[in-house]
Picture 1 (cartoon, rainbow over the protein chains, first blue to last red):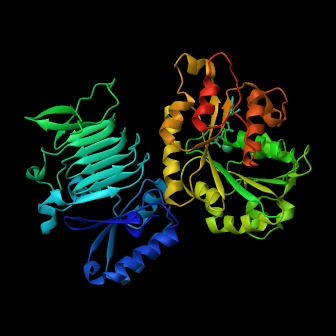
Picture 2 (tube, helix red, strand yellow):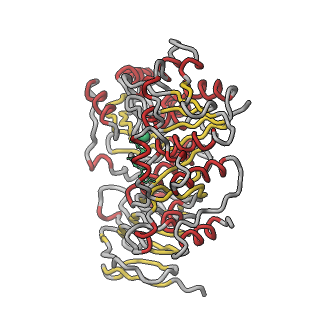
Length: 234
Length: 265
Ligand SMILES: Nc1ncnc2c1ncn2[C@@H]1O[C@H](COP(=O)(O)OP(=O)(O)OP(=O)(O)O)[C@@H](O)[C@H]1O
Ligand SMILES: [Mg+2]
């Protein structure tokens, strides 16, 4: 079952919000978006909104209607991000930005206490992540399934894959712009470790092409060097 | 009647969807089923050519949806099989001429008049793809044993899962067992290992496919073609028969290994 949070992801930017919509029927997604906004109107009121619509193809009529409906809710749409050239063209026609700077894209470091002790939070993902999926989370990420080539996980904490890891992973990623929030103590564990790309904090691993044994491993950093340990049950 | 609606899709283009639809249509019809094939590739229609029916087109799917003709008028009867029909795509429109709800309505109407509706999805994951999967009871993902095609198939499977379309089945097309043996091509096992979905057919690379296509003769009509046989087997499996995977190359045991993988005898 897909939940609403899978369909709509909301992130704080330095100067507004970034909402990422999953793929799906546009009407349904739009309705869901309005419902979310209406339910939390005090949170959204006055917000500057950048909307990532993925591969959704939007025409001028649809996008201007969206903008109007948002502005009725006192939300101002200033950017639309998309993979679809048609949608980008539409946004440009309406005078909206179609790109946001890297800095802006980085999630704002919130001061919620839960974020500080990021050890405490884990995102539970009970399925295989297929190509084209990206998971970004400030705490740990636990996947019960495979991470396929073309899938990506960015976690502020550790990443544990109860399955085969063949996509790209970044553990200990910074939650804001400050290098200080990088977590070089983070680790990546998998039952079968064959990542396309592996990064911990700001270090990118140089993985041997032919990878060794098909047994559980934990990869971490020690004095800035990658340390690969086979997992030993105790 | 209450037809099953089956859509074939792939992510990557040119992997053999149209070839498969035409052959499955022929194979199901020759088993006495009433079949309607729909070309979902608005603006780039070619199922009519592969089926050898391009000269008979009067109305197309957009005409039906926009009410310019009745459904029956857009169903072109096949030359060889009286129970096989094609609803062609519109050539001069684009994919926005149809919506998923148009397709749902059309699917419901067709369910009453035939046993199978086969929809040929365009490549990609945009509107035409969404239209094609909207009415499907069952989706078949078709791919080639090639890394980029498999990657796209994986992406499509992820989308189908998130749209609660149920787990699709896999058709692996253009397998060359010589190349697999020389490890120059991904093996069916490699592909299944990554995609982790049910396998419904493995179709060998067969030069006859192109020759047949150029003559407007779906390969399933060729008695002696191995690709044709593979498509006939898929049709039988769609009808619920438990058909073992072919032994295309008895010397290397590849096909036996596939049988083991899928638990078929
Ligand atoms: N098993 C096969 N052996 C040899 N050639 C094949 C096989 N299957 C398909 N082909 C060839 O591959 C080409 C593409 O096939 P087809 O048009 O069916 O692909 P498609 O997936 O429908 O493409 P598109 O995404 O453009 O709609 C054709 O030239 C066809 O003859
Ligand atoms: Mg085609």
